[in-house]
Image (cartoon, rainbow, N blue to C red; front, side):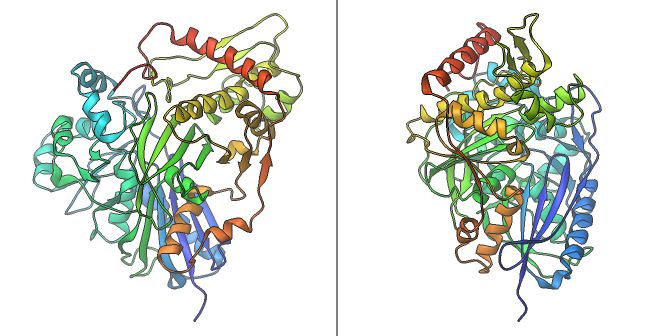
Length: 504
């Protein structure tokens, strides 16, 4: 029998990647394709679900070609995806009811504020582990049903279906036979009681979402269905792993034991800490969410969602024209001994964890006539590390054991200055993943385990080389930098309400 392969479909916010892994866990072929972003109004972000699906087929075809195999050699498929993005479609025709409302979209800020003012946030927080923010799916679904005539009635009748991107892909992969999701994605909707693992009737009433439109919820490692004959995919290939992108990265990094933590440095930063099978109430400013253990069964996790990280470097490049390539930021940062007293707080789209201030705006302080571009570039990179430290400090306040090592992945980990500064600031080693695409690998790794290809996939990870950054800065020096950052953050936040200081 020929050695089997695993296909990972990684559907992200700006593009879709497909990676084919061979029986040794090595990538045999991959492809990536961006798709269009729609911005119909300020604060609105939309995708076309049909373009997403077409992109999945296109990159799958190219990845298989580069691996020099047909889909008959695929033993299993794993899917990972952008999480809170919300799609409605017709059950009979499979046609989208409109564009997808993306996780970045802020159109429901008013609805979230109204729910907070009504006192609803305490119940939402206790059941879902989340906060009332436009980031999540609940108010997106509510908005979509409200603004299309007759849609809510059809949804009550089960004729209109809802899904995060994973559900949309599974529906199409299986030829419309399976309307399902997994716990990691369902836990981002504001509709799932993460302690019971069930869609919560009280939350459905609160957001006006009919139960009939929701998918069935399964463990991340399960038999979600088999492919219909679609494009390059033959009929009958099992889809056996589905995870939201950040939980996929957590699994890809091997953080399957309680207390293990990873940070993905991308457009933003997403820090997840595995809490194991026991629910713990999240501290103010952080989220509780669901992840999975080695076998794909649900466990709890703490999450800190930082909205702007790598995007701040893109802003220096595209907005301020500091350099033509983002990689130049490292050389600029190293060209000065420190930031010259400059502090950058990149609240370019509000602040996420642990502050949750959607109206906050960015700030640069400490400017003098001696300030140069290099100081601002350095301070911007330092801000990414400070925001990560803010979240980890809050996580440790929840009573979890002290984090002894931070596993990291994502594009910004190529910046060696940032990684070293992160280790110095935290006072712990920072381990950079040897796998460039930890998210795609996480979905493939679980799929291969469930399909029986890899009994112990972590052995594959242990054979790979990684970069380790150990702290060199003295703790007093690091603490002095943290004190300056916290002082400037307090100045930005002022006396306004902050999720960091609210009790739920």
